[in-house]
Image 1 (tube, rainbow, N blue to C red):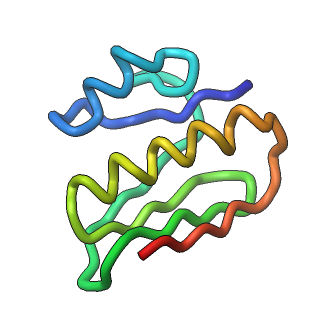
Image 2: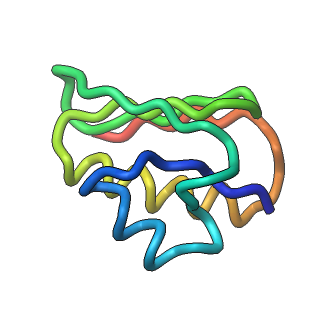
Amino acid sequence: MEKIKLDKNRLFVPFVKNYPKYFSHGKGRSLVVAKWEEKGFSIFSFGEDISIRYEKDNDLSKALGILMIELEKGKKRAIKIRRF
């Protein structure tokens, strides 16, 4: 299973520390995150980079949790998830 590469910021450090099977600060698929005005979050990928848009930090944490489930499936396929 390929890991997701996260930046070294306060939101991501706990994920790399607690879930090293899924996340790293070094190698892996790139993750692009951005805040938006809508409620909830969106995860989008066509098998390469992954994009997460989120309203609150808590939404980003939820999105990363769901992303772990998708990674566990082990398939490199499109991911299109939207949660409110």
